[in-house]
Length: 232
Image (tube, rainbow, N blue to C red; front, side, top):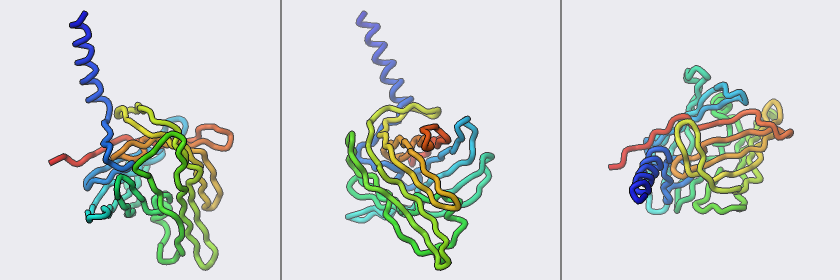
């Protein structure tokens, strides 16, 4: 009997190490090391790919007080043909990461506009170092407006920590924090979703489910590839 327990614990040890991405407790809830990269697939409710977004940390400037991070964001069509790319700035300090408010706007939309022609206003997307069940998080939004009244707004609000759980997807199992919120997008048409996003430390959003006002799942996004820099 003791031998059976011994082999069971050996099996459990290797299973967890090979199938569960370990969280770095000192890491923020997004990629932050130079060379780190995540590829997110965007799918309709029938699991058919609609496109991909790749986020990659291209530069990190470390100072005594804060790390200044540059993240490239590139979109691809369902056949993985490159479409558009932009750069997003982030700031990391004491476990908290703050992503430039432009992170909220789809990359394709950002690539189609010229920032010099728009007035920009908003609040950065912040993931605190500490998260607890039931905790409310600060809303994030971005507004762009021109002199001829063209207007774009994306806001994520009502952000609440629901729970912590292990989430299993195709590429592995992750320790995650589940956050629910409202996502409103005002472009040619107004769209409002209730979203549930599972975040993992050192990686960011593992999966996001989008629900309409009838509480029906209409689409989702999920990490399909992860690349982490080698530790020296």
